[in-house]
Amino acid sequence: MSSENAPHFSSRDAVVCRGVGKTWAAGTKRAHEALRDIDLDIKPGEFVVFLGPSGCGKSTLLYLIAGLEDATAGQIWSFSDKVETPSPERSLIFQETSLFPWLTVWQNVSFGLAIRGASQEERRAVAAEALQRVGLIAAMDKRPDELSGGMRQRVAVARALAMRPKVLLMDEPFAALDVQTRARMQDFLLDVWRDSGASVLFVTHHIDEAVALADRVVVFTSRPGRIKTIYPIDLPRPRNLFSREAETMRIQLTELLRDEVDRAFAEQEAFAVPA
Amino acid sequence: MAVVTRDGETGAAAGASRPAAATRQLAPRLLASMAGLDWLAKVWWTCLSISLFAGMWELCWAMGWADEKLLPPPHIFLDNIGEQGKYFNTATRWQVGQSMGEGPSAFESVLITGAATTMRVFVGLVLASVLAIAVGVLVRYYRFFDRLVLPTITLLSPVSPIAWLPVAIFLFGIGNAPAIFMVVVALFFHMVLATINQIDTVNTNLINVARTMGASKPQIYARVIVPAILPGMLQVLRMNLFGAWMVVLVAESTGVGYGMGQVIMLARNTFNPSLVFFTIAVIGVLGFTFDWLLRLAQRRILYWLPDTAERLRVL
Image: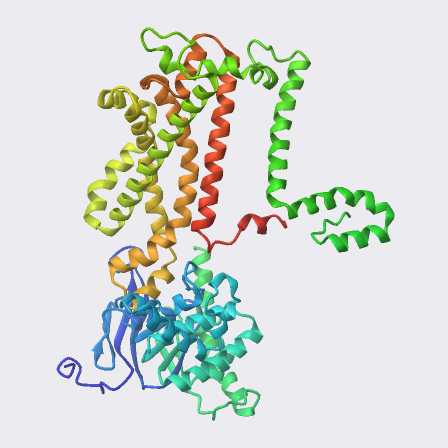
């Protein structure tokens, strides 16, 4: 169905971006370009990390792929569908808690099924299965404010998994967690990813996190965000993050990012002190 | 430094090791032990708060600063409740051929008058909130409704309810209806604006989660936006409760046969400060009870909200 519109890529790819751009408040005085000329192919089951300085548009790209925002240039495809609206096939997990505080854990996890009008038994069964996978079956009947930050993010992951997504989009999901919890959550995420077979697109500004998780790291330039380079992490899993190779990769990624961070800083200073 | 402990045992241990500190810790420990009987402590503090206020007033009277003909202290205006209560019997007194001695007793009169005013506040508040939430949600749901209705609502919302008083009487004459109309009109417009504001501040992540799960617009409104604005709306309702009590008195003082507002007007016209303060006391008790019931309901409905006041207390 998509062949006449986009003959130049395989419709089996999980995400395909062609010339994608986004300008916020386009056509007004406050218009600013967040993304430009993004070309990207993501294979099914691939773990891709978006790395870049703050405000480089990497989260914007994630929102575009989720279908929550419209691209102002180019096209995005996911498998054989053109991305125009959000879809349960592409679940998004946010940095901040996005659980519904008035629902219990299991009701949160099965929210998507409730939308489709599934019966209570079916919803509970699906929620139980998803919570089993994130190791939170015991917290099923608790409310979100009774859980720790790490547990809440695991519930958010369970909620995304309950939709059986083909693409899992994660917007700095562990940024608000402490270092130890984050390391545990990374291991947990890798397990979930291996089981689910979904592609993961993971936004972060932590180089350590990128090296720990990614098959490929997409390094972004500062505003407007473009792809500076795509850096493969071909370390065998489970990874030894203290190995010489891992260290070398971290150093190389740091150097790739440094210019961009410097540029972003210079821009912000120029903005703060008008001539 | 005095340590206020919440745990009775550690408090006692600290007191035993430092006898000098024991007396200083007595007061906090007394308070801590009362915290266990939470409701009793609340009653105690409420009584203390009111007694303090009344005490200051009595002191002013005792010192001769407050003229008892103009500012009669509580022990005077609460002294003869039977006598004061008779004045609440405004409705029967105004009926032809009846004297003050007939009809309901003084106590019954106070009850009837209080219940009538409370009923007007309650009905007005319910009508205003249902209408305001419905209109507020519609404004955000349908763009054209927003453009069509919001300018008029914004235009009317700064108008004082007093200005509506003649309208209430033109439209509804005398009775319950004008008083209820006044309450509705006083609350409706800014409750609509408050509803819209609440909708606009709903966490976009929650809406986006529902969108990625394939929720339609009506589903997002019903399952995300309405539950998300409930806490704020109940807060708005509580603030407006006091507004409703203020307005109902104005309405009653002119348009209605009986009610608290009538008693105040009667007291004014007959130069009876005792009756004014007695009525103020009754209104205060009614409003306080109403607010307390609303808070109880709030805690039931909003079971998921943490107790913020508890967190601020440690500061």
